[in-house]
Length: 244
View 1 (cartoon, rainbow, N blue to C red):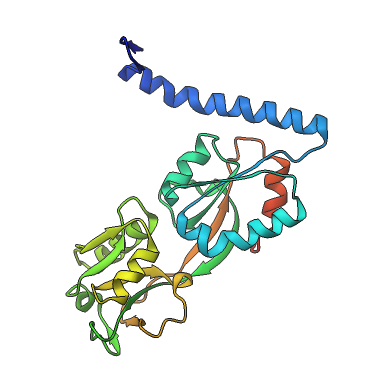
View 2 (cartoon, one colour):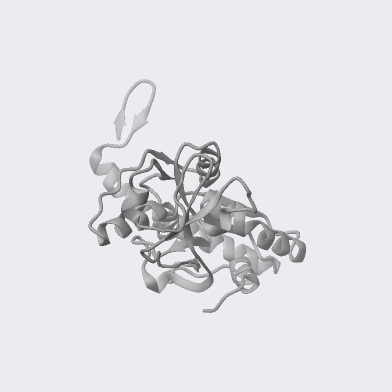
């Protein structure tokens, strides 16, 4: 530690050591919690990691169902990007995560269940963006592109898609919220790239059809296979749709 009169902070060596100590401490705390739960015949706490978008558009009804069945179980949700959720899971800070897949940070052995498939789409307001019929990614590139920031799996996915077609992607706007991207597309600031499950029946926006196929992605539930799964996490996973 580096000590001063008002604060204590880690040295660089301390920061390196902390990366290894923190998961161990989290594991010990989880073990203590599960022992206490077993002695009281309780389910303990359910702790989930998920992005803001997944929380809003997917997770809420499943959390409601779990709460109805297990009203005494505390539920904690930690918001992070999908790559950030993988870090939470590997460090033992959450019981499970719901994340977009593919995810370059996620080891395939962590995937417990494939929950659903979805399609990413480009959307725009036809009053401001005229892209009728099927258009190429090169055509879309000529318009301001609105997308999630580089910390997200969606951004990684779109950049890789453009690279596969020998195109450089230079977004006009990068944000951390799909809802804001939709709002900006609605007022004509550009073409937004979003998962289709975020799009409501909005007459102001239309889906742009691309000549190049956009691969489908998935929502998956992932757990850390190196850590014991709590009873609450097992019950919640059983409530989720999909296949293991």
